[in-house]
Image 1 (tube, rainbow over the protein chains, first blue to last red):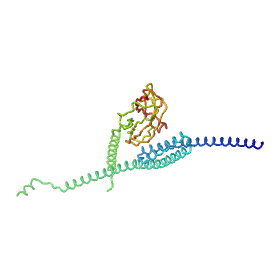
Image 2 (cartoon, rainbow over the protein chains, first blue to last red; image 1 turned 30 degrees about the horizontal axis):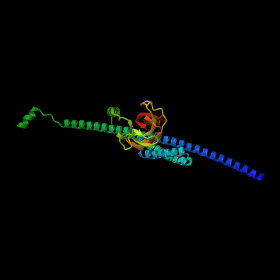
Image 3 (cartoon, rainbow over the protein chains, first blue to last red; image 1 turned 90 degrees about the vertical axis):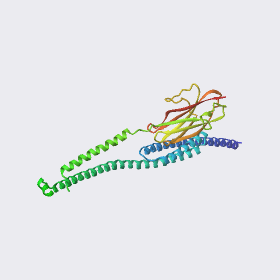
Image 4 (spheres, each protein chain N blue to C red; image 1 turned 180 degrees about the vertical axis):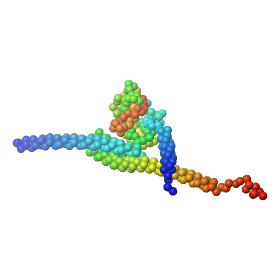
Length: 172
Length: 162
Protein backbone atom coordinates (compact mmCIF):
# COMPACT_ATOMS: atom_id res chain seq x y z
CA UNK A 1 0.00 0.00 0.00
CA UNK A 2 2.83 2.32 0.98
CA UNK A 3 4.66 1.55 -2.24
CA UNK A 4 1.52 2.24 -4.30
CA UNK A 5 1.23 5.69 -2.67
CA UNK A 6 4.90 6.30 -3.38
CA UNK A 7 4.40 5.32 -7.06
CA UNK A 8 1.37 7.58 -7.35
CA UNK A 9 3.26 10.47 -5.75
CA UNK A 10 6.26 9.89 -7.99
CA UNK A 11 4.02 9.74 -11.06
CA UNK A 12 2.34 13.02 -10.06
CA UNK A 13 5.74 14.62 -9.47
CA UNK A 14 6.99 13.34 -12.82
CA UNK A 15 3.92 14.67 -14.60
CA UNK A 16 4.29 18.06 -12.89
CA UNK A 17 7.98 18.27 -13.80
CA UNK A 18 7.27 17.24 -17.41
CA UNK A 19 4.49 19.81 -17.77
CA UNK A 20 6.72 22.43 -16.22
CA UNK A 21 9.64 21.50 -18.48
CA UNK A 22 7.37 21.64 -21.55
CA UNK A 23 6.17 25.11 -20.54
CA UNK A 24 9.70 26.45 -20.20
CA UNK A 25 10.66 24.90 -23.55
CA UNK A 26 7.66 26.47 -25.36
CA UNK A 27 8.30 29.88 -23.82
CA UNK A 28 11.98 29.83 -24.80
CA UNK A 29 11.17 28.90 -28.39
CA UNK A 30 8.60 31.69 -28.63
CA UNK A 31 11.15 34.19 -27.35
CA UNK A 32 13.74 32.86 -29.75
CA UNK A 33 11.36 33.06 -32.71
CA UNK A 34 10.33 36.62 -31.79
CA UNK A 35 13.94 37.64 -31.30
CA UNK A 36 14.92 36.13 -34.65
CA UNK A 37 12.02 37.92 -36.37
CA UNK A 38 13.15 41.24 -34.85
CA UNK A 39 16.73 40.57 -35.93
CA UNK A 40 15.57 39.74 -39.48
CA UNK A 41 13.51 42.95 -39.61
CA UNK A 42 16.51 45.04 -38.51
CA UNK A 43 18.74 43.25 -41.05
CA UNK A 44 16.23 44.00 -43.85
CA UNK A 45 16.02 47.69 -42.88
CA UNK A 46 19.84 47.91 -42.69
CA UNK A 47 20.23 46.25 -46.10
CA UNK A 48 17.60 48.61 -47.57
CA UNK A 49 19.44 51.65 -46.13
CA UNK A 50 22.69 50.56 -47.79
CA UNK A 51 20.85 49.86 -51.07
CA UNK A 52 19.47 53.44 -50.98
CA UNK A 53 22.97 54.80 -50.34
CA UNK A 54 24.42 52.64 -53.14
CA UNK A 55 21.73 53.83 -55.56
CA UNK A 56 22.38 57.46 -54.59
CA UNK A 57 26.07 56.86 -55.30
CA UNK A 58 25.09 55.72 -58.80
CA UNK A 59 25.05 51.91 -58.45
CA UNK A 60 22.45 49.66 -60.09
CA UNK A 61 20.69 47.87 -57.24
CA UNK A 62 17.93 46.17 -59.29
CA UNK A 63 19.08 42.61 -58.53
CA UNK A 64 19.44 43.41 -54.83
CA UNK A 65 15.86 44.71 -54.64
CA UNK A 66 14.61 41.30 -55.80
CA UNK A 67 16.65 39.50 -53.14
CA UNK A 68 15.52 41.90 -50.44
CA UNK A 69 11.91 41.30 -51.45
CA UNK A 70 12.56 37.56 -50.99
CA UNK A 71 13.78 38.32 -47.48
CA UNK A 72 10.60 40.36 -46.82
CA UNK A 73 8.46 37.43 -48.05
CA UNK A 74 10.34 35.02 -45.77
CA UNK A 75 9.79 37.38 -42.85
CA UNK A 76 6.07 37.55 -43.65
CA UNK A 77 5.97 33.73 -43.61
CA UNK A 78 7.84 33.73 -40.29
CA UNK A 79 5.25 36.08 -38.79
CA UNK A 80 2.44 33.86 -40.08
CA UNK A 81 4.02 30.78 -38.45
CA UNK A 82 4.46 32.73 -35.22
CA UNK A 83 0.79 33.72 -35.14
CA UNK A 84 -0.13 30.05 -35.72
CA UNK A 85 2.07 28.99 -32.79
CA UNK A 86 4.60 27.18 -34.99
CA UNK A 87 7.68 28.78 -33.40
CA UNK A 88 10.18 26.37 -34.94
CA UNK A 89 9.21 27.20 -38.51
CA UNK A 90 8.90 30.87 -37.58
CA UNK A 91 12.49 30.81 -36.36
CA UNK A 92 13.70 28.93 -39.45
CA UNK A 93 12.02 31.39 -41.85
CA UNK A 94 13.23 34.41 -39.86
CA UNK A 95 16.79 33.03 -39.88
CA UNK A 96 16.61 32.59 -43.66
CA UNK A 97 15.27 36.14 -44.05
CA UNK A 98 18.08 37.52 -41.90
CA UNK A 99 20.70 35.57 -43.84
CA UNK A 100 19.32 36.79 -47.20
CA UNK A 101 19.23 40.39 -45.94
CA UNK A 102 22.80 40.14 -44.66
CA UNK A 103 23.98 38.86 -48.06
CA UNK A 104 22.26 41.82 -49.74
CA UNK A 105 23.92 44.12 -47.21
CA UNK A 106 27.40 42.85 -48.12
CA UNK A 107 26.84 43.14 -51.89
CA UNK A 108 25.18 46.58 -51.53
CA UNK A 109 28.13 47.82 -49.47
CA UNK A 110 30.47 46.59 -52.20
CA UNK A 111 28.42 48.24 -54.97
CA UNK A 112 28.28 51.46 -52.95
CA UNK A 113 32.09 51.52 -52.52
CA UNK A 114 32.61 50.89 -56.25
CA UNK A 115 30.12 53.59 -57.22
CA UNK A 116 31.68 56.10 -54.80
CA UNK A 117 35.16 55.34 -56.18
CA UNK A 118 33.88 55.81 -59.76
CA UNK A 119 32.28 59.09 -58.75
CA UNK A 120 35.48 60.26 -57.09
CA UNK A 121 37.53 59.27 -60.15
CA UNK A 122 35.14 61.17 -62.43
CA UNK A 123 35.32 64.21 -60.18
CA UNK A 124 39.12 64.18 -60.53
CA UNK A 125 39.51 63.15 -64.18
CA UNK A 126 36.91 65.50 -65.69
CA UNK A 127 38.33 68.80 -64.29
CA UNK A 128 41.95 67.73 -64.91
CA UNK A 129 41.11 66.58 -68.44
CA UNK A 130 39.14 69.74 -69.18
CA UNK A 131 41.96 71.95 -67.89
CA UNK A 132 44.59 70.04 -69.89
CA UNK A 133 42.46 70.34 -73.01
CA UNK A 134 42.08 74.06 -72.47
CA UNK A 135 45.85 74.46 -71.97
CA UNK A 136 46.56 72.51 -75.18
CA UNK A 137 44.02 74.58 -77.13
CA UNK A 138 45.51 77.81 -75.73
CA UNK A 139 49.07 76.74 -76.66
CA UNK A 140 47.99 75.76 -80.18
CA UNK A 141 46.18 79.07 -80.64
CA UNK A 142 49.20 81.02 -79.42
CA UNK A 143 51.63 79.04 -81.59
CA UNK A 144 49.34 79.42 -84.58
CA UNK A 145 49.09 83.15 -84.06
CA UNK A 146 52.88 83.61 -83.71
CA UNK A 147 53.44 81.44 -86.82
CA UNK A 148 50.94 83.55 -88.76
CA UNK A 149 52.56 86.80 -87.57
CA UNK A 150 56.06 85.56 -88.56
CA UNK A 151 54.82 84.36 -91.93
CA UNK A 152 53.22 87.72 -92.54
CA UNK A 153 56.45 89.51 -91.47
CA UNK A 154 58.47 87.33 -93.85
CA UNK A 155 56.11 88.15 -96.68
CA UNK A 156 56.40 91.87 -95.93
CA UNK A 157 60.21 91.64 -95.82
CA UNK A 158 60.25 89.98 -99.24
CA UNK A 159 58.33 92.88 -100.77
CA UNK A 160 60.19 95.42 -102.90
CA UNK A 161 59.55 99.13 -103.11
CA UNK A 162 58.47 99.93 -106.59
CA UNK A 163 59.04 103.55 -107.79
CA UNK A 164 57.08 105.22 -110.63
CA UNK A 165 60.30 105.18 -112.82
CA UNK A 166 60.48 101.39 -112.53
CA UNK A 167 56.94 101.16 -113.73
CA UNK A 168 57.74 103.32 -116.77
CA UNK A 169 60.78 101.15 -117.61
CA UNK A 170 58.64 98.09 -117.48
CA UNK A 171 56.14 99.52 -119.97
CA UNK A 172 58.92 100.52 -122.40
CA UNK B 1 61.18 77.49 -78.67
CA UNK B 2 61.16 78.72 -75.04
CA UNK B 3 58.14 80.74 -73.92
CA UNK B 4 58.78 84.19 -72.53
CA UNK B 5 57.18 85.45 -69.31
CA UNK B 6 54.77 87.55 -71.35
CA UNK B 7 53.72 84.53 -73.42
CA UNK B 8 53.07 82.45 -70.29
CA UNK B 9 50.93 85.23 -68.83
CA UNK B 10 48.83 85.33 -71.98
CA UNK B 11 48.39 81.53 -71.92
CA UNK B 12 47.42 81.58 -68.25
CA UNK B 13 44.91 84.36 -68.81
CA UNK B 14 43.38 82.47 -71.74
CA UNK B 15 43.15 79.24 -69.73
CA UNK B 16 41.61 81.03 -66.73
CA UNK B 17 38.95 82.73 -68.85
CA UNK B 18 38.14 79.48 -70.69
CA UNK B 19 37.95 77.52 -67.40
CA UNK B 20 35.60 80.09 -65.93
CA UNK B 21 33.38 79.93 -69.00
CA UNK B 22 33.27 76.10 -68.90
CA UNK B 23 32.56 75.99 -65.13
CA UNK B 24 29.79 78.60 -65.52
CA UNK B 25 28.23 76.53 -68.30
CA UNK B 26 28.36 73.38 -66.13
CA UNK B 27 26.77 75.16 -63.15
CA UNK B 28 24.07 76.65 -65.37
CA UNK B 29 23.33 73.23 -66.87
CA UNK B 30 23.04 71.63 -63.41
CA UNK B 31 20.93 74.41 -61.85
CA UNK B 32 18.60 74.88 -64.80
CA UNK B 33 18.04 71.14 -65.46
CA UNK B 34 14.40 70.33 -64.67
CA UNK B 35 14.06 67.83 -61.82
CA UNK B 36 11.54 65.07 -62.53
CA UNK B 37 8.48 65.12 -60.30
CA UNK B 38 8.47 62.43 -57.61
CA UNK B 39 5.31 60.72 -56.40
CA UNK B 40 3.74 57.38 -55.48
CA UNK B 41 0.31 56.12 -56.38
CA UNK B 42 -2.12 53.77 -54.66
CA UNK B 43 -5.20 52.34 -56.36
CA UNK B 44 -7.91 49.87 -55.42
CA UNK B 45 -9.89 47.77 -57.90
CA UNK B 46 -12.48 45.03 -57.68
CA UNK B 47 -11.73 41.29 -57.77
CA UNK B 48 -11.68 41.17 -61.59
CA UNK B 49 -9.24 44.05 -61.83
CA UNK B 50 -11.78 46.77 -62.73
CA UNK B 51 -12.82 49.70 -60.58
CA UNK B 52 -16.44 49.13 -61.56
CA UNK B 53 -16.89 45.84 -59.72
CA UNK B 54 -16.29 46.83 -56.11
CA UNK B 55 -18.15 44.58 -53.74
CA UNK B 56 -20.75 47.05 -52.43
CA UNK B 57 -22.41 44.29 -50.45
CA UNK B 58 -20.79 41.33 -48.71
CA UNK B 59 -22.05 38.54 -46.51
CA UNK B 60 -20.92 38.61 -42.88
CA UNK B 61 -18.14 36.10 -42.29
CA UNK B 62 -17.67 35.52 -46.01
CA UNK B 63 -14.38 36.35 -47.70
CA UNK B 64 -14.27 39.05 -50.38
CA UNK B 65 -11.37 40.17 -52.58
CA UNK B 66 -10.00 43.52 -53.66
CA UNK B 67 -7.07 44.34 -55.93
CA UNK B 68 -4.42 46.88 -54.95
CA UNK B 69 -1.92 48.67 -57.20
CA UNK B 70 1.08 50.67 -55.99
CA UNK B 71 3.37 52.57 -58.36
CA UNK B 72 6.76 54.07 -57.58
CA UNK B 73 7.67 57.32 -59.36
CA UNK B 74 9.95 58.64 -56.61
CA UNK B 75 13.08 58.46 -58.85
CA UNK B 76 14.68 56.03 -56.38
CA UNK B 77 13.94 52.67 -54.73
CA UNK B 78 11.22 52.85 -52.10
CA UNK B 79 10.13 50.52 -49.29
CA UNK B 80 6.32 50.46 -49.32
CA UNK B 81 3.91 49.19 -46.71
CA UNK B 82 0.19 48.93 -47.49
CA UNK B 83 -2.02 48.85 -44.39
CA UNK B 84 -5.61 47.69 -44.64
CA UNK B 85 -8.07 48.95 -42.01
CA UNK B 86 -11.79 48.52 -41.63
CA UNK B 87 -13.78 51.43 -40.22
CA UNK B 88 -17.22 52.90 -40.59
CA UNK B 89 -18.95 56.19 -41.42
CA UNK B 90 -17.45 57.86 -38.31
CA UNK B 91 -13.86 56.95 -39.17
CA UNK B 92 -11.75 60.06 -39.67
CA UNK B 93 -8.70 60.04 -41.90
CA UNK B 94 -7.08 62.39 -44.37
CA UNK B 95 -3.89 63.01 -46.32
CA UNK B 96 -2.29 64.29 -43.13
CA UNK B 97 -3.65 61.79 -40.63
CA UNK B 98 -3.91 58.02 -40.98
CA UNK B 99 -7.04 56.30 -39.68
CA UNK B 100 -6.81 55.56 -35.97
CA UNK B 101 -7.83 51.92 -36.37
CA UNK B 102 -6.11 48.57 -35.90
CA UNK B 103 -4.40 47.24 -39.01
CA UNK B 104 -6.27 44.22 -40.37
CA UNK B 105 -3.61 43.27 -42.91
CA UNK B 106 -0.20 44.57 -43.88
CA UNK B 107 1.79 44.08 -47.09
CA UNK B 108 5.40 45.13 -47.69
CA UNK B 109 7.53 45.40 -50.82
CA UNK B 110 10.49 47.37 -52.15
CA UNK B 111 9.89 48.87 -55.60
CA UNK B 112 12.40 50.24 -58.08
CA UNK B 113 11.68 53.56 -59.74
CA UNK B 114 8.92 53.16 -62.32
CA UNK B 115 7.95 49.71 -61.04
CA UNK B 116 4.38 48.82 -60.09
CA UNK B 117 3.09 46.24 -57.60
CA UNK B 118 -0.28 44.54 -57.98
CA UNK B 119 -1.71 42.18 -55.41
CA UNK B 120 -5.02 40.89 -54.11
CA UNK B 121 -6.30 41.31 -50.57
CA UNK B 122 -8.75 38.83 -49.07
CA UNK B 123 -10.89 40.29 -46.30
CA UNK B 124 -13.76 39.22 -44.08
CA UNK B 125 -16.26 41.33 -42.16
CA UNK B 126 -17.76 39.27 -39.41
CA UNK B 127 -20.29 41.68 -37.93
CA UNK B 128 -23.48 42.54 -39.79
CA UNK B 129 -23.73 46.26 -40.53
CA UNK B 130 -23.97 49.03 -43.10
CA UNK B 131 -21.46 51.60 -44.39
CA UNK B 132 -18.27 49.76 -43.62
CA UNK B 133 -15.27 51.73 -44.85
CA UNK B 134 -12.42 49.52 -46.10
CA UNK B 135 -9.36 51.78 -46.04
CA UNK B 136 -6.03 51.21 -47.79
CA UNK B 137 -3.16 53.39 -46.63
CA UNK B 138 0.27 53.72 -48.24
CA UNK B 139 3.20 53.98 -45.86
CA UNK B 140 6.93 54.09 -46.59
CA UNK B 141 10.01 53.20 -44.59
CA UNK B 142 12.03 56.38 -44.04
CA UNK B 143 15.69 55.42 -43.76
CA UNK B 144 16.56 58.79 -42.19
CA UNK B 145 14.18 58.43 -39.25
CA UNK B 146 14.26 54.59 -39.32
CA UNK B 147 10.47 54.55 -39.12
CA UNK B 148 7.48 53.58 -41.22
CA UNK B 149 5.75 56.85 -42.16
CA UNK B 150 2.33 57.61 -43.64
CA UNK B 151 2.63 59.05 -47.19
CA UNK B 152 -0.83 60.65 -47.19
CA UNK B 153 -1.94 58.33 -50.02
CA UNK B 154 -5.07 56.40 -49.27
CA UNK B 155 -8.02 54.77 -51.00
CA UNK B 156 -11.24 53.36 -49.63
CA UNK B 157 -14.46 51.63 -50.59
CA UNK B 158 -17.87 51.53 -48.91
CA UNK B 159 -19.55 48.22 -48.37
CA UNK B 160 -22.45 46.72 -46.42
CA UNK B 161 -22.27 43.41 -44.56
CA UNK B 162 -25.81 42.08 -44.85
